[in-house]
Length: 249
Image (cartoon, rainbow, N blue to C red; front, side):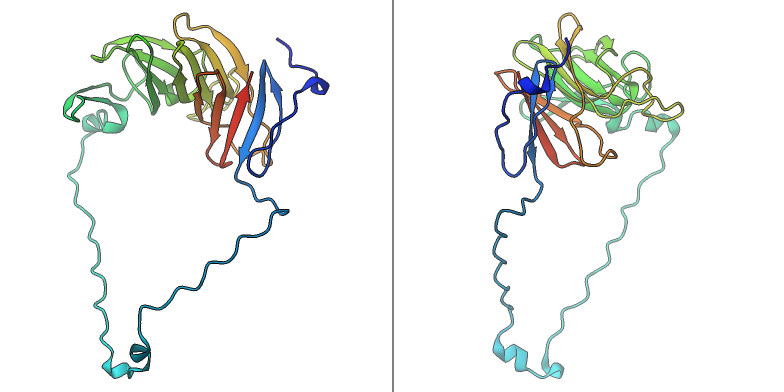
């Protein structure tokens, strides 16, 4: 569906210090920013910290002062060498399962691009059936497993996922902050645009696409965190821009 006419955009409610509005495929953007507002008075300077030394201490001759021992240097913890096969199953490439008391149960997955393999898993969430959805970012796909670690499916139509969320209606939200046409780079995902995609967990169909919000510096990447509330309002978090974007229908 084509974007709305800018003249028909709803007014943007101001949050904190700055705000901006953008119409994107049935959603309007509200920017929650940490930027400084020069019109607001500056916060009062904190009172100077009082010295823990008394007046007697300050008047004591240097020869009578007791000096603290120098800090002990921290020695690096020795680590045994790892073989290439050991590196395939590092915790960063596996999913670990624990019971409600925090007791380890099992783990699954290892580094790779095949079925049941991970390559920079960047997020995890359950759907209403108890299935596990992984944001397998460096494989540019969403991986689906059951709770015993059995691989069920992979979906690449949601882009290169940095963040992932599933609401109570089994609507899937995926934030793509890295896709680009860059042969030879890890972020290479030709033909896929950065942004947030919204679709169905059951069918895998992408119903909405929200492009990245405008930024002051083109070097700042789009949001990589995403969540939604019970009203369908979407929240996207941009790490380097230090901002949270709110999209309402």
